[in-house]
Image 1 (cartoon, rainbow, N blue to C red):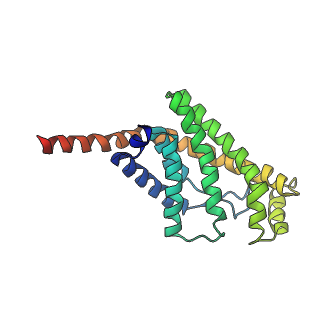
Image 2 (image 1 turned 180 degrees about the horizontal axis):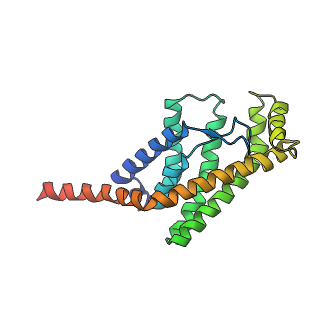
Image 3 (image 1 turned 45 degrees about the vertical axis):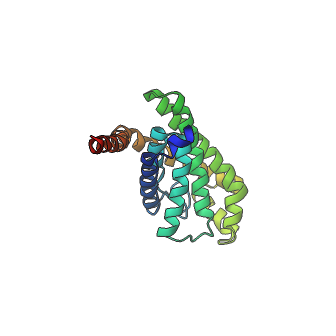
Length: 212
């Protein structure tokens, strides 16, 4: 029953639209040179997906994350051997899935704020571990690890290895991203959720009109 509801015509249309919008937003990155090296770019692609996750559920959020990455690769091929796209997918899911699960059982304003705060913290933690264990070693195939660490040390002298780089650069970067995504989502969710509900409503009215 849950699968059928997720794969309804309305939900597929909504997930496709929000995933496509997220892919476009993913193309626009802004560096935060006071927090992390310039090769870390902040994008707001999680905003439409978080809105869709609150409206349709956490499983829909995971689907939209995949749709986002696939469409982004069509719009702009990878320049990092897919590691950047993979990181975006994993870290995005680490925010929207916990947030969606919490909001599913606490559909209040406070519940939504707590859900986004929890998602931000979890994304930061996963980002630190993921970068230290997987992303940074893989990035070293494209850029010497010494150069990566030196770029981090230029911002924060405490950086001396992959773990301190992840803790002092990647962690704060993802916290700032999570806060911005959460604030924008809080501002637009009500209006967008009304539009999402109206998609099914208008479709239902059209069918009833034809049958009449």
